[in-house]
Image (cartoon, rainbow, N blue to C red; front, side, top):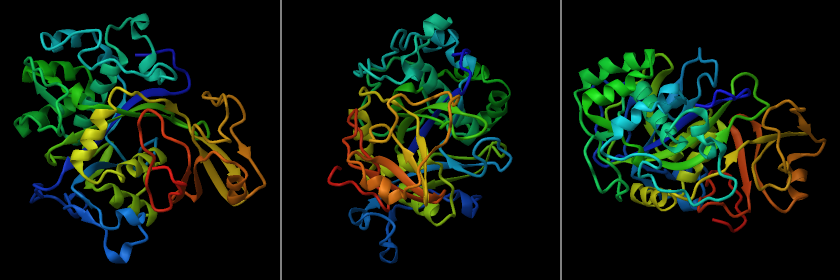
Length: 395
């Protein structure tokens, strides 16, 4: 754990995608908690997504949790499960938990091929901070722990040697007694170190191999209050598992297809923060769970850069600039100590037409977002596909 950070905290989250072909709806579920069948975009909603998605049927749903209105960070927003890192996520006790299954230095995760611009959250040498647990492992443990605390979904596997750690296909969760799991959740919420104790008693280990590295977002400096450097992972499940929100940090859950979330955001029924909106747009390119799993598996060792969105205020709205855009600063200020406001008297359209390299989101309000991108994605990734995407030939 990096205790020297002054301007933000480190965190981890999971984009949890689950197959819906054999889903079930809990008899006690409310309308806000119902697991929905695959979505086929209706004819009357042809303006929701690009033409290539009009006939797409999504055979999976993504878990979205609504944050409490009392939350000090992103109140009411619909987010992926996750939270801040805890010192126990870097505890050397995990080495004993994982033995004889695997051991340092890489815990059988494999070595990321990225040689430049590796996200600091992963590149930082944690041994210099007194931990033998690398960031790639600790942030997966954090994401799995927080997901269990917030949704009751436990991404673990029996503690026994297994040669198929990175096998193909979505995973099937190990079944445990729900009453027993429910008794552990408040213990973990009270003290994250109890996650180690729980894994020992249940004779299981966090399934860190099911989580594929996806992206890394640093909260922009123009936001007041808390900021987070968050590692995003993706995990594909065969079917929707038993889910229950914690009633404290999260007040409801919903399993929705990526287009449903984006359309809900566009219609102002759901508030999806920019990272969630962007990542769900990426998923819109992959409507089949098998393809999403294969894609995440194929690029699992490609790595990612840390993205710090930079805002530019225009005369008729504002622009979120992302790395690669022609107006993106060569050396952006991550600390926020410099002037936070970049402004122009020009319109959004004028600013766009004056440059050749685009990687930006234009917005006139939190629910009206338009992506413009014509650069190649790095690290074998894909750009989002959303309602107003302008890709200029790059898919």
